[in-house]
Length: 80
Image (cartoon, rainbow, N blue to C red):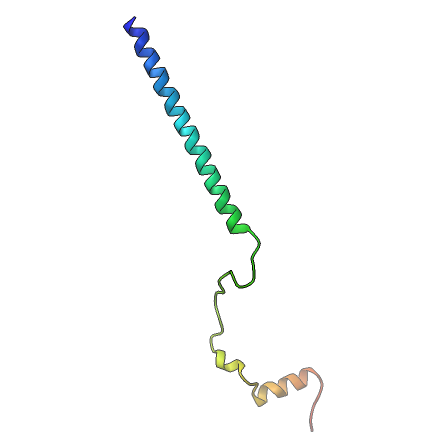
């Protein structure tokens, strides 16, 4: 009789461990899915961080004479 009680207790403990692990796996899967959906969701302008930038932003203020000549050559607008 004592032997059967020990088997019953072990069976119940094993069942509880199984249910606990199953609940953990489901919880982790939901957490991973939510993180993946948030990561791959649509981007809204202004909400995503902009990375990088110009090395010399002052270079974009005004074009130099050399830049204007190069653009004129590209557009075939030579001034003689």
